[in-house]
Image (cartoon, rainbow, N blue to C red; front, side):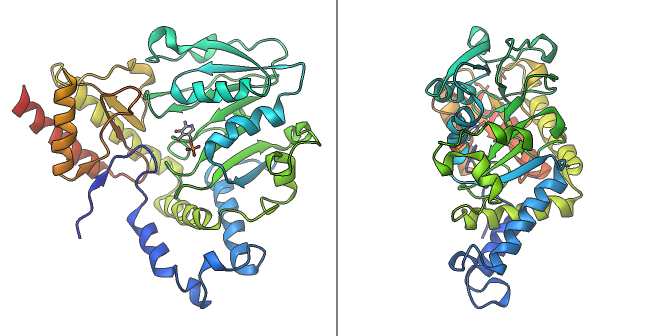
Length: 361
Ligand SMILES: *Cc1c(COP(=O)(O)O)cnc(C)c1O
């Protein structure tokens, strides 16, 4: 069976070895005679998976001891609400940087919970740019400052992050977590849904500085409280056991490859090649994003008109390259080149792009 190369934005490609392990052990998990998805989440068999997953995140991202790592349901979207519910007290305000579609959603949800200041609005530049980290000035007494490290739809990515002494930085890392080394200490809270770089949809990770747990209001619904989940080590209720199992296998794969640094090198190579192919096409392909903030994960480009773009996507599909249609809100083409895609996968796309441009110039 030949599998297509999957450039989908999310859910997205999962390493074949992970899918094969899940399939092989679905019915009989490690000779227990039972599936992992039918045993108690409080039993020893699942308990080991839970602990190992958290330990792997801590190890691979060098998460310091002053942070808790939570495994939660609800996707990154739930975090858009949970974050202000926990960290934005009445009478204070939170700063947000509007860098694109996902930041915009985070802002809209936060506004339902409290006062939001948008301190940079990328709409002015059609979301093709980001502020320089040095130019970011939080409001006095901001409860936190929220950024989106990688805009999955617009294809912009922070290469360096603003750093502050007094304002907690919060980052949505859903689409570039574990794609490059980051300094966890630069942030007070990091959150990410699993289904781009970490595994099957259904679990999100939240990495939160312990001192912030004191902010969770006591009268908040239990599931919505970071403090409740942290105290229970993410076993307050039944955790999403299947995606956590998948995520553990993905993390083990990253560790076997040599860790985040090694994965990051391949990611740089993939993105560099693909942007070079776009930039050297004499305008046949055009990337609308400012060069200094082009995403290493979601590469977006346009062709000269929408008819040709549709043809590109269709021909690519026939060639076994799927998921290249841009998000419906922006159009164009997009290749999501997450960790699971190899340099060879990207080479196949580039060679298709070269052929397509020669045929349709
Ligand atoms: C996909 C994505 C989300 C939403 O994730 P869900 O798990 O579908 O809620 C949020 N932020 C970013 C940056 C994303 O890429």
